[in-house]
Length: 408
Image (cartoon, rainbow, N blue to C red; front, side, top):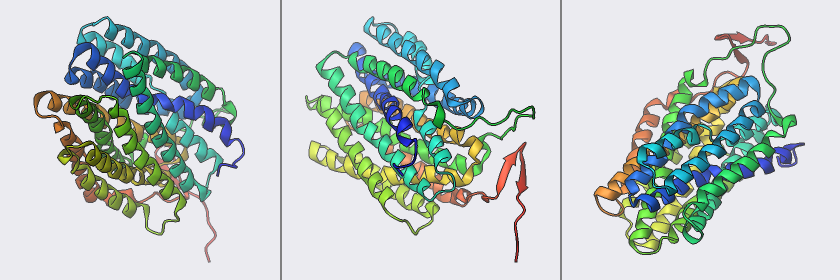
């Protein structure tokens, strides 16, 4: 797969541009908690960013499908850099919470959706190739590698340099990586329409029932990310070792990354729908045990298990999109899933922050348990909707058209 012609031209800048995605939430939490002394306020500010990203990301994906990735990405990274630096300045000036929210909205809304854009480029390069499953696993591993490095880097910068260093670095990486990725025009998916004919209009990817089921599942995954970020920060602060936060979160993300490598290396015989149900059941079971951990070794071990269970669900979910959504709407579909993770993460950091402030240390771990169990119940009930669309059908103007085939 990595020998595919032109792949490295978008993989390397894409990796740099994705790094800030894993740094943003934890950087906001650590900075705002430092300036306000409240995990509730920190979680709320991070939540506003996540909700804004979840709401605007799918529309950015739709615009990228229609006008091209470069046309969306360049202005997006410029707005994100400016608004992220504004949020940093307001937090350091001890601005009121409403002012932080005002800056958090454009910061989240303009987060570059580089991961979905890279996945869409793989769809162009590997169209109808069996390597697409490998590409989905590779992208999940890449995502998780960023979630290993990002929180570690952000925590190290915020705790050893200055509390604002995480957000400043996030903004700089977004600007540099995003512009370099946007410059790779040769590998971006071709824009649909033109040549004097009416532009082909695809229905929103969210109209596909299976995509809505996957969105629910990814909301539960987001609750794991958000709940663990706040709860791990509160736990390590309570034992007087705030620097362990990045290490514990890195262990969790490392489990995710390693299981992603295994998933990509195996030739699966089970149907992806079944793999998703099994993997998600294991995720809900392990996430439900997090709140019982009261020591660093136990929390690290459970975090590793939870991380190990996330990658199979993510990989299978992204793989199912290939069979559910036509090619012209896949960037949007991928951004709905990415946005669902962000929205689940936003809700989780808000609720977990309130629980940590009002109840006991570690109460925020109840959020991943509740989120994954609710999503699993939905997945079990509606799993029949995950069957792929017939591959010989295309959607144009809401009408399915069959290709002629030879029949014995």
